[in-house]
Length: 564
Image (spheres, rainbow, N blue to C red):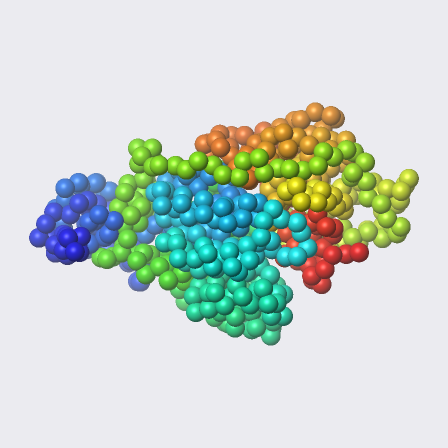
C-alpha cells in the first residue's frame, strides 16, 4: 500500500520523485510527437511526464530523445552463445529491456532442468527475461534429442512469474493433423498465449493452425506470406538474426497502419553480429534508413510488442508503466546513451551487483569417437538428394545432383561445391551417424563441426576430407561442445561452449573476439557464407522446408519424412 501511495504522491508532485530525467523529449508512440517535460520515476514505475518535477536524483538528458525500452519478441538466448547473464550485459546497454525467450535449445539437451535454469536467471538479470515454455522438445520424431518435454513436464513448469505462455509450436503438421501429443500441449494453454512457427503455411492449413489459438508468427519470409498471416489475425514478428534475415523483405509491409500488429525479433544472433551491426537498435536504424517511418519502427519495437504479448505494464513512457527507458541520440541514429530497466540505470556497477547462477549442462557431449570411414556415403544410385543453402534464410532448396559412386562411396566434389554434411548423435543415446550432401558453403578444404545444431543439438559437421571431419568432431568431445575448424590434420580455430554444448562460460566480449578467428579460419578454407556456423546449425532443423538432415538421415520436410 505504501508503494501505491508513494506512486500517487510522486506523480502528483506532493513528494519528490525517486528519479527525474530532465531536458529530453519523449517520443509519443500514439501520435509520433516529441513531448516536452520531465519524466518522473518512483521505484520501478514511471509516475509523471509532460510536466516539471523535483527529484532526489536528477539526471540530465538534455538533447536526447527518450523512447520505451525495446522488446525482443522471440529469441533463443542460447544462440547468443553466452549465458543469460552475459546476454544481459551484451544487449541491455543497447536498449533491450525485455527479451521473450524460448529455452528450447538447452531443453533439447538437458530437459526441464534447462528451462528452470532460465526461469531462475530471469529473477536476477537487469533486463526482464520472459521465459516461454518450450512446446516441441524434440521438434519432431525424426531426430534424437538429449531430452523430451511431454505435456506433463510442461504443466509442471507452468506458473513461474517469468512465463507468458507456450513457445513456438514448430510441429505445424502435428497441429493441423491433430496429433494427440500436440493437442495435449495446446490444451494446457487454451485461451492463453501460444507462439507460432509455420513457414510457408497458407490457405486452409493456415486457417486450421491459427484456429488452434496460435497468435504470433516469426517465420514469414515474404510480404505475401506475412500479409496473409496478418489478415488471418496473427501478429507478425519481423526477424533479423545472424542467419535468418527477413527484415529487408518484410520492411515495406511495416507502416503506421500495420505497426500495431507487427513486432521485431532476432531469434538467433551472436555477439559478433551484435558488435558489428547491433541488435534491435540495428533493425530500427536500418528500417528508418530504408524509408520506414520512425513511428512505425519504434512502435513495432515497443508498444506493439507489449500489446502482442499482453504486457500491459510497458511499451510507453507514460504514468503507471514500467520504467524501461532508453535515451537515444536521435530517432534515426538510435544509439543508446543511457538505459533504465525497471527504474535501474543499466551500468557496469548494476551488472556487478547481480547474483549469478552456477552453470548447468556440463559434460553433455557423449558422442562416439568417430573415424574417417564413418563419413563415407554409400548408395546404389548416382541421383542424390542435396541440401541447397539460401544465404540469409533458414529455408533450403531440395536439389538433385548426379554424384558418381567410387569404391562404394559418393565423395565430396569441390568443383561443384558438393560437400559432405554429417550429423553425429552426441547425447549418448544410440551413436547414430547420418551422411549427406550440401551445396552453398564454398568449402574447398578441411572441415567445420559444431554442437550448436538446431534443435536436437547433435554434432553437425561439413567437410571435404573425412580425416579432418573426424578430427573436428572428436575435438568437440574434448572441449564439451562448441565450434571447431580443422584442415590438414590440424585444428585451425575453436570456441568452447561447455554449458550444454551451447553457451560459453566466458564474458560476451571474449566470445565476440573468439568468433573472429573462427570466421577467418572458415574463410581460409573457401567458405563464402557470412555466418557459416549458425547456417550449419539450421541445416539440421527438420521443421523448416525443404530438405534437412538429422542423425537419422536426410529429411524431406515437405513430406515430413526421412528419405529412405
